[in-house]
Length: 121
Image (spheres, rainbow, N blue to C red):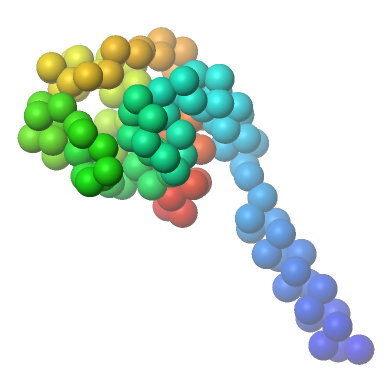
């Protein structure tokens, strides 16, 4: 009887740990709305895949042909740099190939939370 209770508690604990935070859920929705025209999580599209972008360096995915400027920048994609990038990519890395800008700070924060959660950070 005791082992069954422990097993149930363990399953509940894992389910809660794996559940998306409310901000990450909003981020997933914003990502799907704003980013999937050019990006996917796991495949190259017009832009690189983004599942593991959080904490990576710019230009690191060998499957994607980054601009020379982005390859040379070697930016660590943390919350601050991703926020600056999504607001104005050219201000972060001039001569990059990304033209999209996201002016809404709440959407940027939610997308960043989602990408961070996907990366397990």
